[in-house]
Length: 321
Image (cartoon, rainbow, N blue to C red):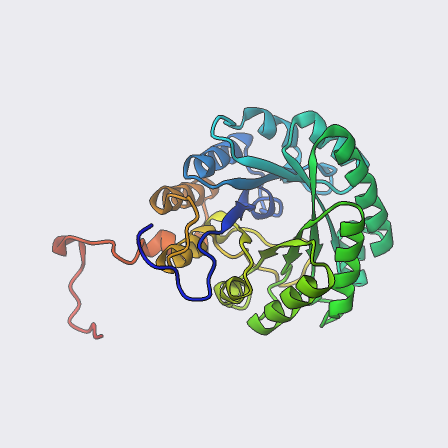
């Protein structure tokens, strides 16, 4: 990329597309294995370097993830993209390791109430499970990452104290989990909270390699990513076409949209290694396959310098600058 990077931004970031997992887990109708595989392979071909492709959870809890092993077996791995999967417990971790994931993602909520609603157990029980999965990963030579849900607010408790985020992050780090994602589960993040939490982690858990995962529930997903970039964060999770949302969080709409985020980054001179045009095509194919209008914006309008023939544009005498 030839343009100068926006002042204060890192020169390059790593995008993690979580659409195949977070985007499809709560889709209201079954999504075929073929649709998932086409989405994943399309994202890899577009240059997305890391994908959260599935979760190894009980099929009765999340039916759309019942084909996790089948999906893993069919992915085109020739391009070297890192494939991760969400795992809730040791049983899921064993299945994920057998399926050949590159990394497992353990998760729990910073707030006690949401953890109970999400995984039906206390936060400390989830931390113990994360420690066990970390040991399994070390023994199998599979990396383990940690996600902290409700890191910017809880739909049941409201504000989540920074001390609660630090408690989970330190517990992760004590078990060798240093790649830690702050999850904006119901779109409660604001730029101020992003700054506050990123700085607290940098001070209190300096070994943490932080990633940010935003939803666009209140329309500030990209603004929050902007705040993270100003704090030097270089890993971001997003979902192709903006699909997704926590199935156990009232009012949670889709994730921040991958192609919208990549567009903003490229226009800011930040490298991602992703072909935006190819990514837009994946988003459009995904929308067609799911049969619903999806919230991504750049997939509709195209890049800023997209040009049209005059006969493609309907004349309107009422338009104005």
